[in-house]
Length: 606
Image (cartoon, rainbow, N blue to C red; front, side, top):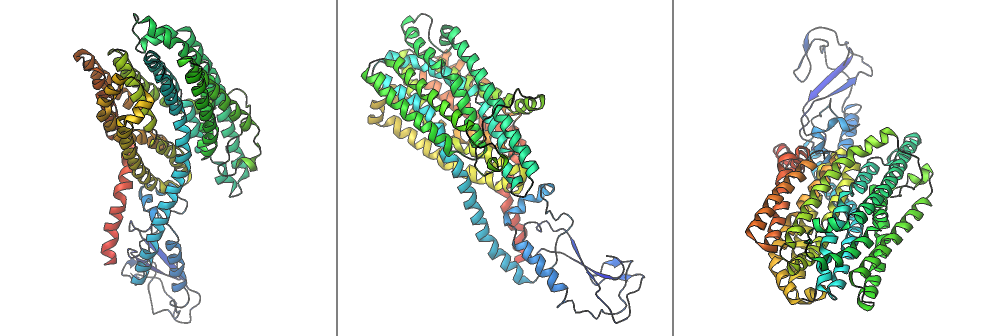
């Protein structure tokens, strides 16, 4: 402070406030209100804390009563400010620049010991409250997302169960078809994931609530352009994929594992493939709109729409497959009808939404579907920066699953049928922890925009919940595949059931750590650090390909194939540990940051 002021400098370790734990200094200056004594003169001296001060020297004690006037006012103000901040902001230690209230140039003033006790008592329920709030936020997205994600695997499982009651040959024929459609779905799932990421990173409500309507309008316009351009791209790409499947159906089926000499199996698979191919443009468009809803944090809307589609598919499968006897062809017709109906309803209802800035800035409000013309160069670049990485990641994953099915086909129809049923059950239950990845993409992307200090705690909560769901999925996999009643409902052939039982240990084991790999992908996307994901997937694919080659040479059969499933997932987790630098940084903060703070605070409290 300048002439006519007294400077107090001290350490502020006794308050465990979130922004004061790093021990920085704060300078409180009390400017003289008035003085009746000898004025403070200039010269060389020491301030009352012993720090050398060449500017001021104390000639005699000031007659001002700081205890009743300035000191208590200032200290009480600081105490109230510190207690009002969540204890979780300790994670801002390395992210100070992201907070407008950062106390980089301040640390603290020594407070009475009673303040420490009060702050500790105050922070404990605050931590618990924030954890509960995060669990509520995650569940609000994950639970509806779980229903939406399970609908496609449920549709395939219903097809499998209905066809399995009619013909083992038709059931075996569905395996390569399912592999092809899973490949197409996940190869182009980047459309949905990129839409979710871009929409979640531009929430208009955060600007509208503080009165910045111009920024809110800008974000609404950006989100509408993202959804419009992604929807147009989905229709184009879906149509191209449909054309490719129709034009090259037989070569693709042989590539997926059907031997060229097995004409009967090829003839059984072709109609199912061609009919299901007609629904791909609608499926791609619906996943883009689902990504838009998830980006806005509204997971219930796609759940309701796809839930209705699942019911239609179930009724159609039972009627056409079991009662009409159409087999795999009837299952394909029921599935496509449900997909087209869901997409058309989603498009019409999205186009009818209010497009004003005020309506679009409401929390959990979906982005209205409007035609925004052809995408600009900036929009294409923004979208493709995310999409290309996610596309290459999806390609690696689906190549691995396709190779698993192709290797299983070498064992004959029985082995392929057992692999098909086991894979469908595994695929369905693997989606139990999958919504954690969706929640990570939505919530972490949102918090990285405005509330970065919450991210480590959010990551810790996500991994904890994902671990519980992964253990539950593993247990359910073992129960479902071993239960005679469930196996009998899925397939009638006794030899297929026997072979399925031999795959249970490998399916259960792989299910236990699949959630770790999936959530790690989602966290990296939410953190905006995902350029290395294709490298991780490529490394995992090459490792799996080498393992499958060994299985084929040694004739280890479908059991060896499922052992390679474990190799694929294990290598993904290992490569995340080695290559995901930003993920390691935040996980370290999440699981070790709290201990570090406690070590700093406890000696002071003592």
